[in-house]
Image (cartoon, rainbow, N blue to C red; front, side):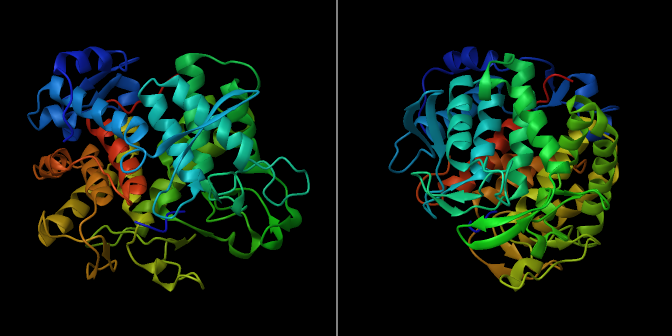
Length: 431
């Protein structure tokens, strides 16, 4: 749950040599969405939007490497969000720190693992996974979140809120499946596929459990509603019949429909299409903005503790990345091209340098300076958009410096994922 909101480098040739090992499978493509006849998973060609915008490949490779280096191994006081935290019997430990809120979130841990996977950084991946399993994962049989991760804990592992935010589990699961394909399976928690299968089975089938948490007695269920085939806002029974548009990840559900437990593959295939329909209905018909929280019928949900969740706020920035990644990988729903065109047309109408962080769904600005995280997400919308303005949003991302300072966690994670998407280096493995 999100409640927030160029460096010098060595010779480009060295970075390009290092970046070449990332390619793994497939290749980058400079074709526009309209020219692509099939998704990237089938074709093996992932769009390189930076190259399409005219940037040399050596500079693209250097930019991605520099961002990873700063966010994962830069100055811990002002640059890094990745923090080593010693070792245990399973090996090194590390967490991703939300510096501004001074906590560790399942969202950030899972984003960090996905970034490390895409960058072919197994050591960082394993250290984050070890920390997540050690300090955030619930194993107690009578815990309402058994089988899931606390969404917010302190840097020492002490829980802040023990219940899960399902987007964390979604990224954990997919990153683990990709790790199994890219690096092979190890033992224990490093048997990536077995870990992903267990998480995914619990996400769909976990039975209700009533028990004590650090916030009192609660009852938790599965992360997905089997009847409506949608991800829940939370498994806590009080709010389980709601969702969050930015938690809808049809691209990932298509992966699960191919590599997850066989008995559930048909469900995940159906869930992918349900989420495509949901995102299209949740997006405003003029602006394509989605709310932070939603009802299963795709109307905005004003949560009792957050009535402003009906607006386009920090969670909702990510909706465009979700539908655009799905189009780029699978090319199953042409409405996603329309959504990205509509969204980018709205932000262009606000002024490329003038649009702000928060809006009502019909486009009334609510304030806050233009954040790097939103610039990053609007650039990923170009994975699906086919209007020429799409490259203006890619160039806007290119011009942004690597996030630093107190807001570097959320901005930095979204920036890093957007760089990978826009360089053609955010890929599906093992399909």
